[in-house]
Image (cartoon, rainbow, N blue to C red; front, side, top):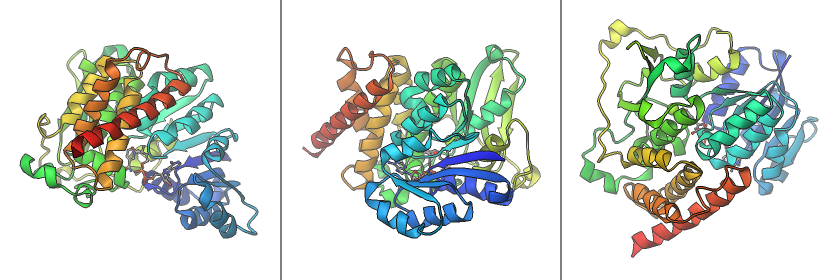
Length: 392
Ligand code: NAD
Ligand code: MG
């Protein structure tokens, strides 16, 4: 039986992964090694019991007792804390889903790769913060990374049987998020609840807000560069309100290969789960005649400053991605907490990038886990400073 571990099993990607596993026979078909979650202990315990996992881990120490009680008498091992999550990655597994949200997903992903596993990577933050380290670790240990972000899965599928050297450009699409059609002047007063409603995709709260600001697309542009090894000037973003074309790969002969599918993450998760084969998936089939038309337009730079910042970060190189992600995460925390306005997020991130770019030994330090984590802290500190500046 294929041994499977899921990091972030209680999240949006985690639940969709488990849905596919359940439909394929659950514990009868797969050997579930470990499931990890956060504060949603009841859900984690329920998943662990149903899938007969060997181990359930909550990332938070103060949730340990609840998880232990919920799993008492089941024989399922229980652990808590950041290092326990990391430890779970060292348990032998054939396929590991990396679906923790944020920079917290980096360490378990790296540990998993060091064991030569196949890593289905939804956690885009790990590629953005430490892309070269992740790719190098995979190569050194014969591990495989399969992209799970829908755009990157689409590109990956478009490249099957192709030579990356023949690729001229890669286009990823963006729905435009919750505020696509809002007047720009109204964005300043947008609330977290408004930003957390996505027109097409059903996702976790943080990535949904990042879709409205296009910080999500900014991370994805960097993710394309890191994963596929193309130059920044080969990567384009198109606003596509229908979210049916996920990405396009342009080849040097002018051919453009598009990947279409319903806006359902089980497409990308299922592709990674069944790779290199294709299995039947419970996703809606597109009725193109019924849909009638697909629309595309260039993103408006005034509405989406995050995109410009992504290209600046790629030009800076080195560890700038780690700074960008941490500053973005801190700015997003501030927005969710009501401490910063929607449009202020980009200003905070820009402030942090300015602060680090002038100092030697920061983004030009070697790309090691230690340096990434240290710079993550530095960037969060500067972001807090940017927040204070905004208040004055
Ligand atoms: P989510 O918020 O729904 O779930 C996150 C999971 O991580 C939960 O299980 C949560 O308990 C766990 N978690 C939270 N904080 C943690 C911490 N500090 N340490 C360990 N675990 C922690 O998020 P999601 O929408 O499922 O997204 C997961 C990842 O996948 C993100 O990196 C996101 O960018 C990426 N992604 C998501 C989608 C989507 O459709 N949701 C699409 C593409 C990429
Ligand atoms: Mg995506």
